[in-house]
Length: 95
Image (cartoon, rainbow, N blue to C red):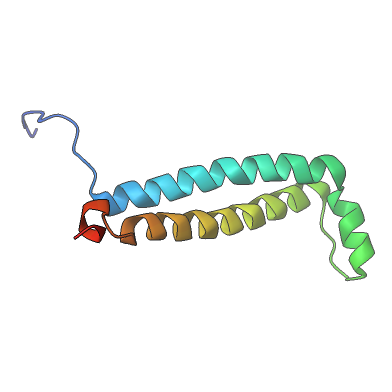
């Protein structure tokens, strides 16, 4: 048995924090977008209007829609995080 002393919670690196923040914020945004979108549209009726031969159920349509919104939200959140991290510092711009 290994006996190591607990040194407290390990701190995340700045990159890990940014990735976790992007994933969490985009998950929440995708959840809200999915609820709002599918409150108006039924996934089975959307498939029927597209005239494609895809046999997809309602639950699968909700899942595909959620992951679509999650990917779009993650892209937007990632761009925002990148812009914030690469912005010049306020003190540097005054010199």
